[in-house]
Length: 92
Image (cartoon, rainbow, N blue to C red):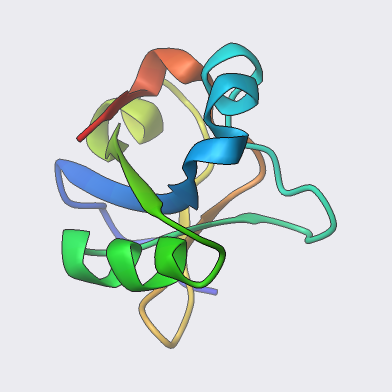
């Protein structure tokens, strides 16, 4: 995985049934190795729609990385992190 500078914002698509937990505990990889983060809003909507009515989180990616957190971009353009604390995202 390469680790270029991220854009100012990235997005995460999920569903409303997970929202309360995410807002309290942050984004966790759960059964995966990394949290998958979309490069744009439209992709996040597609990802979130796979499991019900989507809700999109806007992540302050540049702040996240500048604060010393690891953020990677895979060869297919998906960004990844081991964990994203709630302080770095808001609901779109």
